[in-house]
Length: 79
Image (cartoon, rainbow, N blue to C red; front, side, top):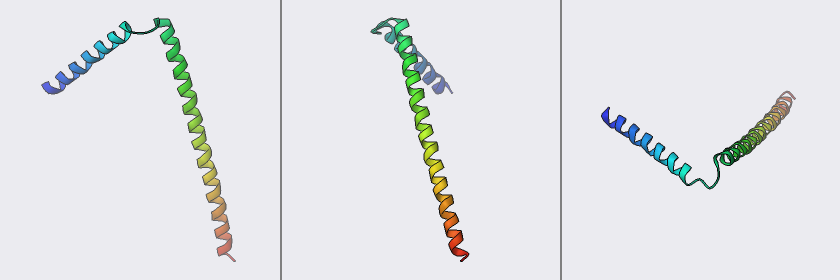
């Protein structure tokens, strides 16, 4: 149990030090950084939505093809 607590404290301490260094060496102001983060987040959201839509379209096309093939096979078997 003490080992887990020690690891958690090390992780927390490293996070605090990393955040402090990031603020210290940031190449631009906080306002500009926040705008960049928002812009990047929106870009990634749009990219993710496009990927999901493309996947949905592909699955729909596949389902349509499989349905069509199933109907053809069924009609061939009933001849």
